[in-house]
Length: 166
Image (tube, rainbow, N blue to C red; front, top):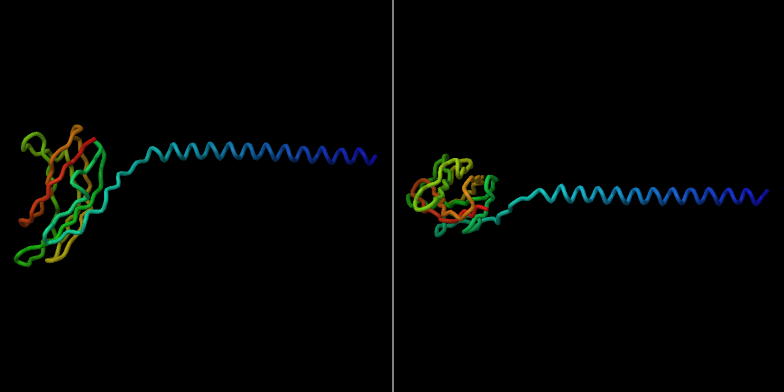
């Protein structure tokens, strides 16, 4: 009689260990599927990160992230334009100060507002101070590289750069 009870205990222990192995295999499988889903989901998300432009100064009153700005066609890009007010008369630039960006197609033909749209908020810039403008750019231009300029009101110098549409 003692032998049969001992045999039952071993059979129960074997059932528990098989159930444990099945649960572990199932958990590892679910973990693998979850990681594969997350990798696939997050690989679709791409964010273009442009470097922070240098601080503007009297010698370089407008700064942008680089001389060539890459952008994908029909997608938005956020960049920072920094402006320094070096008004010779010592005036503050008005509260409606906003940088303008104009790009050119072949020759001196400026692009339309639907081909290159620029969105930013105006702000005042006191004399001797700098301000940064978060600028959102979207383009429907064909693939290629286009010359552009950043302009400020009040006679501030312009800054040239290239918009590289991919």
